[in-house]
Image 1: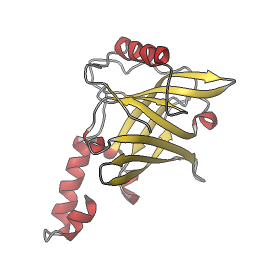
Image 2: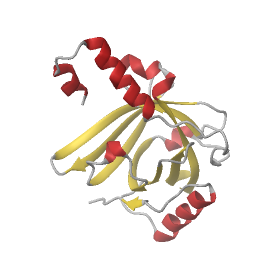
Image 3: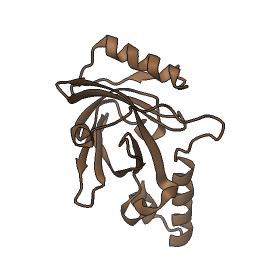
Image 4: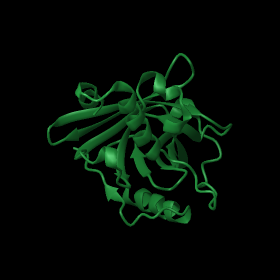
Length: 192
């Protein structure tokens, strides 16, 4: 999208303002009347890093083209922030999105995430609150996670493997409902 805009004949400043306004409209902010969803009490960040397979999600516009094989990879940067690489298969091939996150509370379960390009990641208007709501573990390693935004618009079930036991999946949906998420449009993600 940015490449398309850069090739347009519109003046640079109005184009940047349009992009920023669009990005700002897509950010997640908590509603003032409802407290944010509950998170896990403590997240071991080092164990949370690595590759996750998306098992299901609440639909979101920037994933509309994703047909299957959606993954997220989290790695620690030298500056202490978390580098994010999201990839998925589309009918035309693979696409990816690069993001950055930082923890904003002592539990490590609340992350500010931005997928803005380059220096724009520093601005708060493009950041969303991603909350780790629930996890499962095996021998102190995280095996699955339920992650949502504080405004309850977006929700993901993630697993370290391309499949997840249905009992865990159903439990995560119940936890999401208990936390005020409308899961009527929740969809499973195909992993091949």
